[in-house]
Image: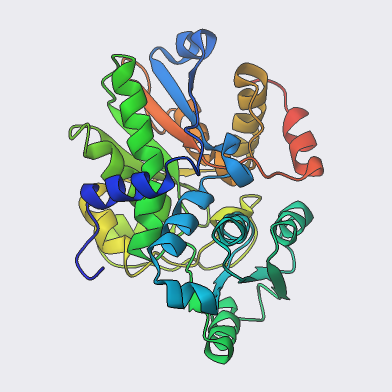
Length: 328
């Protein structure tokens, strides 16, 4: 696919994913709405197969490959959710997968990736380059590199979550003023924007990022790709890409509104509220967009707003830490 991805590409991805991915629910809570003075809807991708939205893009990518390329296998790199999504997509389609994962990735994500049949190669997030390791494996084996976000097949697969969200809101009679999605490299946010705006053109879409790792927000503000100063240091382990993607950033400039940035403490508060009010288990990265809505960085008062709760693969210690928070 050489031309920029479109809404039609998201629709095509949805057809490939039919019967494979779950149509996750769009949830609403009257107490939360009363507190915020508007309507807040949560797209619960934490309930998706593998516990995050990532199966959408990974399956769409493998399903779009030629049969000959699928036989050679696939290699990817990820802190966990893309790893699990790609491993499961490979299992479903009979494609051998190798995943390069940071040694400090949550043990649950590593175990789940192996459980879907993938070979896991661990690396040091600070000292090593996952891209170099993965590229070396692909060169040696002939496998196809499946990037975590920076490819049209990936972002249009992720965009099916936005397509579903817009369809579900429309069925409820809700005209969405804004939608927000967590962001690492921008595949989910840009794909969601394509999916949402194909049905609801007036809805603005925003990317949520953790403080200190807000490269996309700063890039959108400056008009050029910015890079984070650090490679680690946030509890949002899934959202630590160093800079926006070559495919995602040009699209982000066209389809996304200003970025939203939240602190780790605000993320923990959002995780606590999601469990208390919506009965959802969220990992930190999966709660970033919700945190932006709860803190008013994405205004809800007098509006209808939806957020993607993108993943629920959280380790016990971090989740317990969130639940110990006093309700805000």
